[in-house]
Length: 292
Image 1 (cartoon, rainbow, N blue to C red):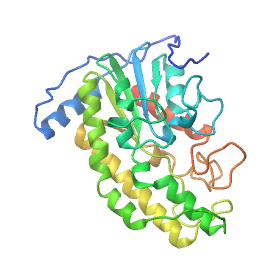
Image 2 (spheres, rainbow, N blue to C red):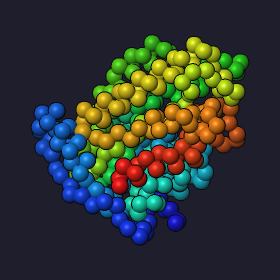
Image 3 (cartoon, rainbow, N blue to C red):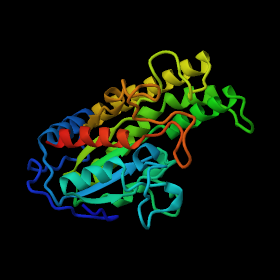
Image 4 (cartoon, one colour):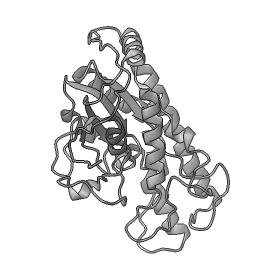
């Protein structure tokens, strides 16, 4: 099928249809989350429904060609990212505003690459939202690349502030929760799927093409684990559905025989430590399975 920046793709049969629901925005937080969680579990999404994709580079797909026509060059938004694959397969009307480098602030309040805060794309008519966010709030990919540059004797590598990362890991759960709250407020009848980050490093050791010392690799594994935990808790507390891309890709890390993410040393045009096409397909499969 031919994808457009905003598209409706034809399918033979729709996804499961369910009733939408609206929760009271003034309800206590636990009650509000429970209401949204129950509604999300029961909700279905029709073919042709409005779908908005938000997030950072792990949603946008930098280095995976071709890029989406009309999208900001800085966002490096691919026509083959997981949102596009889901929309193509399921016949959804996609608005993709994901952008490489995005933080939770870029979702909620701060413009990026000439586009409004990403949440502005979500309306009361939206029926599905996917979001991958939080990694740039804790400098996850950035620190991976900086340490790999240093450990491979590169030049002009920059620096990593581990104290700042540890501090930011303590607040990222709340920031992701704020994103989910805003999505529920703007689209109370939408399914909200929070997609965490693909697993980059193996559980122990490294490999050729992943030039990290044991100390640096262990630090990055800890960042990934804490980000994963924060994302899970934020989704649970705010009544969203978690798509566990990290768990599904645990055996598809960069050093595996079937990697879903790139190594540090990549071919021209690819983004170090970012999803491969296989990773985007893996995430799309998880989402379409969740949708029924």
